Image (cartoon, rainbow, N blue to C red; front, side, top):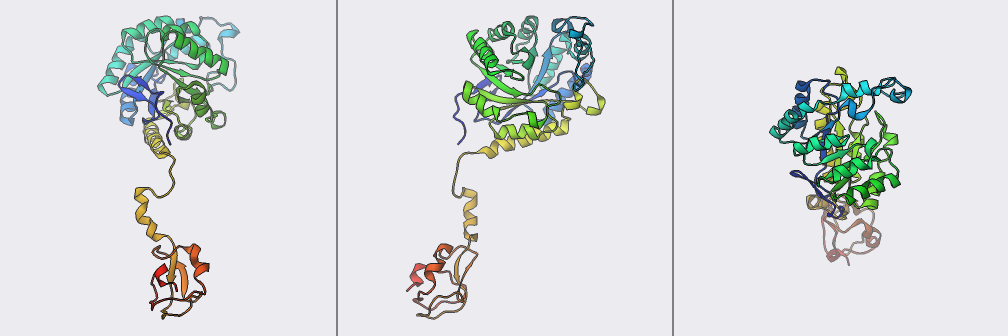
Amino acid sequence: MRPTPGTSVRFGTRTIGPDQPPFIIAELSGNHNRSLERALALVDAAAEAGVDAVKLQTYTPETMTLDLDAPDFVIDDPQSLWNRRKLFELYEEAHTPWEWHPEIFARCRERGLLAFSTPFDETAVDFLESLDVPGYKIASFEVTDLPLIRKVASRGRPMIISTGMATLAELDECVQSARGAGCEQVVLLKCTSTYPASPANSNLLTIPHLRRLFGLEVGLSDHTLGIGVAVAAVALGASVIEKHLTLARRDGGVDAAFSLEPDELALLVREARAAWEARGEVHYGPVASEVPSLKFRRSIYISADMRAGEIFTTDNLRIVRPGNGLPPKFYPFLLGKRIRADAKRGTPTSWELVG
């Protein structure tokens, strides 16, 4: 059976919980490519794909890092999409200008979507409060920023927290800090903080484990290519799926390489909801729609005309479809018994015919 409801979270007009279809978030991140028109087009694409919410990231380069060329402030990882990029310049390129937020949020409302964001410092929290967001997202890299966690939690709104890189001790400290500051509505997202992530390092079995450990709803923030990992996560109990969205990967952008295009996002929405529906409950025996098919099971039929008193043999009994005769398990028992009445070929066996 499905997990018992009780950990459900009310997020704006939607409910996140085991008895609800997965809550699907389109992450815009920096895929607006510094164009408000493109950002609004992304909202439209998300709405047409059928997601529940659009998420932004609220920061400025100054609130993220220092404008320095020192080694600490330059990405030095040959495996990174952003290798050798200066942090300040990367965040300057990727950030969503704060003056765009009201228009993007308004477009979301027009399209029937929830709009919220990830704040990266306390000034972003205060700004987002002015926009009356339905809740907040905490990025994996900020899980250990307990002052920020407490600031967000004190606003009394639901929190969705990504868990990439976090140890159990760090997650426990984060969740306890949120609860201690007044937030009981918490959702955790399994996340692998590589860009892109691989299916092999996604470790989706962590999802039901997190649910058991913390007694919270758990979802997936997915940076893999394609939709397979996200659909599998739903089958394992993920109640939230977050995916980055781009209009076209060929257009480039800081996150485009691991983002879904609109038609892929629409497919994810359909398949994730199908996976949730397919989980169903523990059930044995035929469901209602299978009952008509029971008649096509095999059973024992008389395969040659017989007269009363004749003996059942392998020449006049066969196990065939349909299933209107005695079950096949009685075939050895019938052999050697006598038939009580005349019967034509094609007669289903019954106990009334057995002498």
